[in-house]
Amino acid sequence: MPKRVVSIPRDPALIALDIVSHGRRGPGGSVLTPEQIEQVSRTVHRAPEVVVKVSGGARDAGGAKAHADYIGRHGKLGLETDEGERVVGRDAGARLVADWNLDLSRGQYRPLSDRGRDTRPKVVHNIVLSMPGRTPPEAVLEAARTFARENFALQYRYAMVLHTDQAHPHVHLVVKAEHECGGPRLTIRKAMLRRWREEFAAALRAQGVPANATPAPLRGRATGGMKDSIFRRLRALADAARAPDQPGRTPVGSTFMRAKVERIAWQLQQGALPVEPGLARLQATRQSIIDDWRSTAQALRRQGEEALAREVERYIQAFPPVRTDAMRIAERLQSRWAESGATRGAAPDPGSPPPPQVPTEPSPRVP
Image (cartoon, rainbow, N blue to C red; front, side):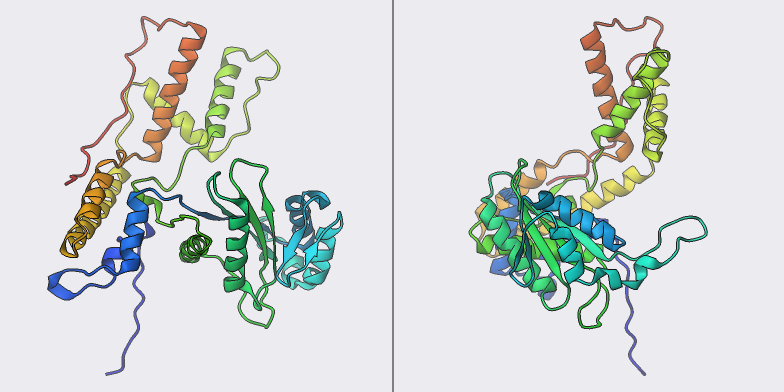
């Protein structure tokens, strides 16, 4: 009977703790390698987590030039290329585009779709590699060089520049999407980003910098967050409703997230926020992660790592409660309303309902 290869899809939110799922030894339990024990130690001791994110990309040569000029601060910073050259000057972006022959990328000349959507493939990807503020900038740059060389050299052209003008040092990396030898275009997937984080963290550790690359759910953190811009928009709407004739109070244009915030605000004003069906799934995911951490602690004890096993147990005890996006928005709204009332000295309306409470569910069992 011929063999068949079956691909089983896996939900990224339910990824088990890799250090436990690897290296199993049958019913006797798992055996952790020294590298896996080091990863556990870095995680429970909260080693700085690296950030590798795609900040966008360009679909034509003009967009690629504009981004190269921007990260090069319009000639003030030099762009370091994959060939070891340093491109400096106000025309650095134009020179990079010409050297990479981006004008010959046929996809950028594809017309828009019938619905007006831009379906052109990207000619370059914009990637950001960063670490917390106290990391030496030189180490971040050297780790970025290693990362780029290992992943793109002789396949995809790239250029980078180090920025130190913000609270944390970070490297902007521009990578050409087309393969230099006729291979596949560079398409960035979530699994690739996870692998890139691990490789960048390893490159930083080679520079003597403690760095980790553990997925957020395994650290008890939500994978997303609510931006302050959402709440600024809601505040603009509230101000416009109070004083529609005053200039400067026009609310920001409608968006999906603004509509979501408005709906949650209305539900709070009615006195209740419905429990979302997705909360049960988040609770189940959290419980699965805690169970994996418990298995890790048991494996550590079997290998004589009693102190680290106790630290693992304390680590999962400190996990924050599980919250859905709606619950986080509701908490932020209530906080904003409380701050607004305290600042203006407004007394509560006697006829208004009591302050609504954000619904909670029992936390998953923690050892």
